Length: 145
Image (cartoon, rainbow, N blue to C red; front, side, top):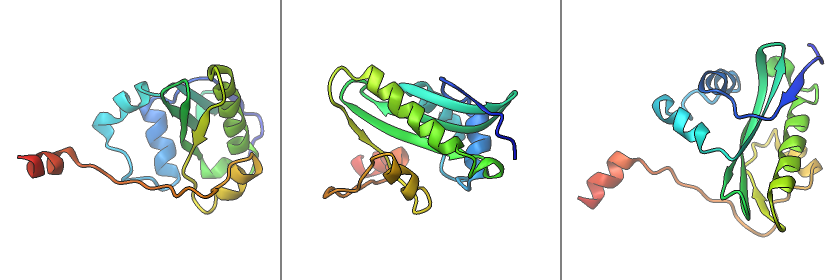
């Protein structure tokens, strides 16, 4: 495992995103035709690379002023445990602090495995409950019609 990685402030390409997402088991989590538009809607991004190979990623979506949502933090399993994920998250938080004109609400969802990392950087579950749903446009259109 190499520790000669560097961080670059940019959103991953669709191909980089897909490869990393699949490497961590997110095989069915992204609709590939809509991924380029989704990535283009990101306000901030960070990739970790060794040479030309992207080994980690993270991005931020939201309004870019008050609400920021950290999304898609993933590190290739061959490079996990080397501080890559921590560095990506720290850089995203730094970029958010620069972008936000006033105190900002920063949220994320965490897997059980990722929770210690996020907690170590000040993220807490608090008294709010994270909730989500998946809206399938085809099904929503059928229901409305």
